[in-house]
Image (cartoon, rainbow over all chains, first blue to last red; front, side, top):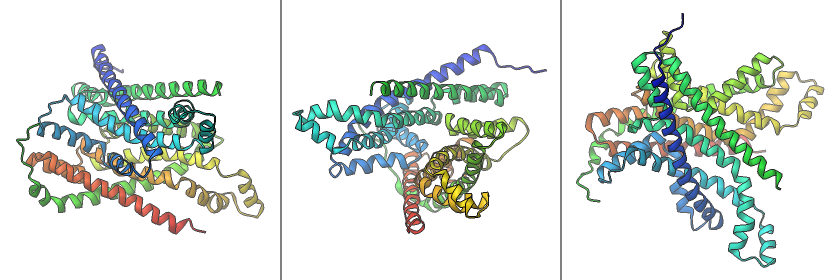
Length: 216
Length: 222
């Protein structure tokens, strides 16, 4: 009958890998969202002046992530910066996330009708007050689903860091496969973990979205 | 930062003809996976509104697995997973099948969204003019659907190009990343070779977008 060499410590090893995956995702989200919000706002308010920024960020959407990892990693050794692979993974994923977040947030800011801004200004709000109390809350609601999608994409793309030697979920399952030679079982467990993480993130996003709609 | 590394770009430029040949393999792989992906996605879209629960279940599972797991995992599953069942796919075949699976899942979701924008009354009007169900779908629905989903399809095509780089992880050595990695292993000029590969990928991605614009301008003018 069915027997397996998959042990509890293997599961623990995979869970540790999943934790690395989650940490990478969270760092990338943090870096990507903060810089994406700033860049997105700049791109929406000063489209002409920040065009070069747009082209620069577009590069990260047009080059495979795998190659970005290899390039940053080898630049790291060439320049003698000596960051850990984990830090490089976070940085590259963060920039990648930022390049997508910028577009999402730019779209959100542009979706706020100009008349609303004019109305706010004519009620006596300053430019920064308008931004803080009118534009950003409205833009956030429009951008939010896109932002969740970007982060789901980043969660899945963390699997590529195995190429620069970080042991995350997929790499962990690969080394277990090499030992016990049961790829289907191990990969299905890894897949279920990815599925669960994506599903959890999407569910959290839906919940926040619903919460916001109630207060509208 | 002190550099004690001297860049040797001439070594890398000598590999350019091979890398261009690799680019062609990359483009072919992506186009093939995209064509198959669109066909499967159309079938999945039709299945999603089928009366049979089994068909709907298959389509729903396909779409959610394709969208909720990494593309690299999907390729691993086809390469190592099927290998355990004594079905040995080549790296290239596993790559094409993996990207096709992924493309089909994402495109099916786009198509489903696009289909909502086409009023159902149009199908009824077409049927009442004497067109058969399939004719109404082919002549009325699909042309409009293509316009709506053309932009997401262009994006998916760029992603397909970028995803082909994953082939190297399962040992593919004749696409752009594979050729680059082969030279990298021989010479250890990692930065130079991968920088050139990055430029080539960028050019291919921009080429795809330019071509899509031209195609949209030619196809969708009234």
